[in-house]
Image (cartoon, rainbow, N blue to C red; front, side, top):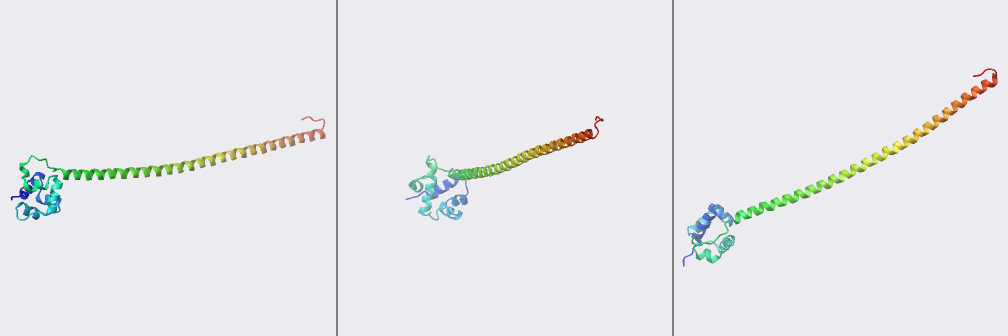
Length: 173
């Protein structure tokens, strides 16, 4: 009984629009293996046939016993592209997630730093306010002392005038 393995492999290589090396690499085979199968010098192992059929979503029976080039079957020839696209999307999603985590960490760090800066500024304002309050109290005390000194000087002057008046009753100041 004739099998169509070589015809179907040749058809799939052409359908995929790739070289025998590229096709073989998809299934862990080299160019020589694929050439031997296409030229009917050897037959692939059942595991290889299963892998190819699984990849293209075709039955093993169809792959071995039917000429796929004559069938109107839709083969999954875009799986490689879909797999690559899926891997790229997965990597991009992971990168996005990593960036989100990094930005969240940066925001938390900046928030913490800003809170620390605000606390330091509040402490400086409190210190400055307390120094202003201390300065105001000090100024009040100085003014009070000056006032007392001025009163003392006034009293002293008045005392001097009174002494002069007592010692010279006829003179008026």
